[in-house]
Amino acid sequence: MNKYALSWIIRIIIAALFIVSAVAKLYPSPYFAISTFEVKQLYPLGFSENIAPYFSRFLIGIELALGILFLLPVKIRKVITPASILILAVFTIHLAYETFKTGGNSGNCGCFGSLLPMTPIEAIIKNIVAIGLLIWLLMLKVPDTIKNRLWFTTTITLASILGLFMLAPIRPVETILENPTTDEINAIVPIEIDSTFINSDPVLSEIKKDSVKKTEEIKEVVDEPKATKSGYAKFYPDIDKDKKILAFFAPGCDHCQHAAKELTAMRKKDKNFPEVKIIFMNEEAFKIPEFFKIAEATYPYKVIEIIPFWNELGDNRNTPGVLYLWNGNKIKMYDGIDANQFNGKELEKMVKLPYSKIKK
Image (cartoon, rainbow, N blue to C red; front, side):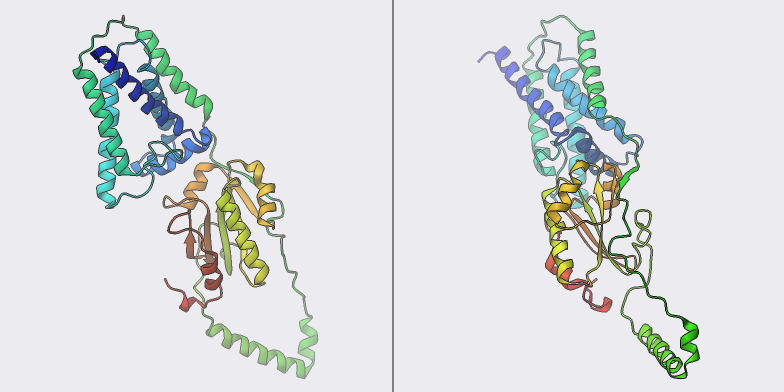
């Protein structure tokens, strides 16, 4: 095989790598995928909420442009190939540092988004192989016989970057929707008793005093955590009162639907099961009615934008997220579909336990 043919084989492989990497970061929908990439990959690197949306689109646009340029008759030796090596080297150093710092090789590095999950070690190996191919490409010393087309290269690059901004426009970060009956569902109207009537009857008055005394004694031995602020009162003012289940769901997520259905079954079985409230991600929000049909119940919900959703879920967690709150205290948090996935049987037992019996 001559050097010219070999160089084009390498170019095609590298082009496929960059193009697949860029397209995968847009799966399953551009805005959702890019926002998730920002929260899970760029925020931990120190990018601010103002800079990350621009950098993410710029980076993916550059990846796409490089992939396209390797397939076109343009000069690649002076700029395109060295730039590709530099980008891959930076990614590799970052992945190596993160792997060393965390002492593990778990999770998705984000190189191919959620389309092709890849561990940091796998990504490092992939990048090293790609860098090796690019160095080999330079060592072949196949001359660029094509005339310099700077305007063409620049146009492809700018078009790729602008295309990302058009596919996934930057949205304002805000809560966009809530159901109108948030705290009216399952509301209990207290019965008022005329205190004057009770105080006028000596028997009833004595009963009242005895009742108050017993109530005070009961309060002294109540086994529950002290009231605190969970930080979710901005969504539900009563979230820090008594026991509550706060769920973080995506309307089109099968695992979220299953978790919601399981919560419904637990509520039907136990009338004292904590009230369930939901925060939905603004991804396929039109599926919320279908979500509640599958869940076999309707719950109070709020819909917030994707980036705030991931931030509220926190700690690089994934959906479905189910949080058990007691007087504002975060007793148990389930998330994702791996080791910490939602465990209905465990939660069902936990909500019945006094605070001192719950393992912390």
